[in-house]
Length: 423
Image (cartoon, rainbow, N blue to C red; front, side):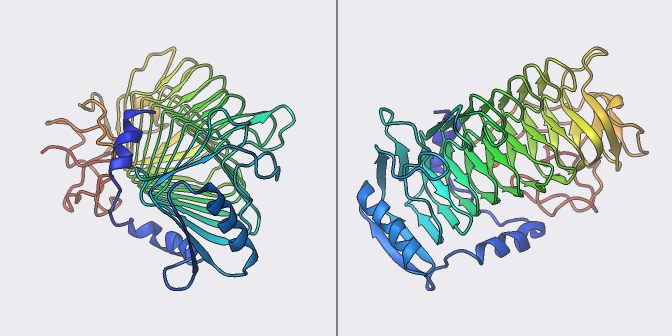
């Protein structure tokens, strides 16, 4: 397990969500159990039989339910059911909050010697909030498996908060294969969480495979690997994709595009986020490959692609504003490819990253420091060094009040990129 996962287990986000996503987060949260209006079930440390029985009770009682798991490791050693493939726990078909004692305290895992199965399955009527839990070691796949998702298969609604998904593997072939950590065919919100070191040995989306709306807030997607595209995250053409105050780093795509992010959607929005050190071995777009969208106050740096588009590739219209695009570039392997337009106030190492530069766009060395991460979800970033041309050069009208790390932006002249620098 990566050092970042260990660090994330010791820390939680604890920061206010940006105003632009409060409405979305509340809309999802209102569908899920809240203290005082849910039946509460308790399970003692490591009591897997209790956890299984509690999910069956929650599915049957017609209420919104909360299952509280005491600190400990809940080790699954057998297949519980074969709904859309083998699952270690009963399929969740009700409104349920599964709440642990923190990702460092409560773990749900598959026994390494057990048969192949994913950890969690959420049915079409299921609405799951996974809170303060580490879920690891799920493994599912094979040529006859219709669905992937080593850790979670979601057909309904899932909210993941203050949790870690790590070490899950999918080996599933087919259109819905992949998703080492998560396959989501329903709505998915990841908030204050870490999706790390998951693997899709066949297919897309090493960390997350999403086809019906994916929102990532104050979270980290790192160290994931896909044999095809979307090392960290893959989203479908029908999936609006929103990423805010988050880190996508050190993910790898094999024979596909988009080391960090591959999206077939033209509705991709990235704000106050860092995409760094991702790679695509035999595809385009080391950092990201998207069909279109908008990126505001992001830092895209030090990504690699053997086929070109080291930082990013845009299939159609992608707009950049207050964004840094940095990294190695050459005529044979340019930093960017595709229809990238500037909304001004960008800092581009390669001026060819935009079809046409705007008056306040800057080019040349961004003076960036080394990628750093304190382990908190969403805290991996590339700092601005002193005398960086990005300092005070952003469009303050477009900047949120705080940067990726929650630090106040300079209202009179915010910095270009995901984070405020050293002035």
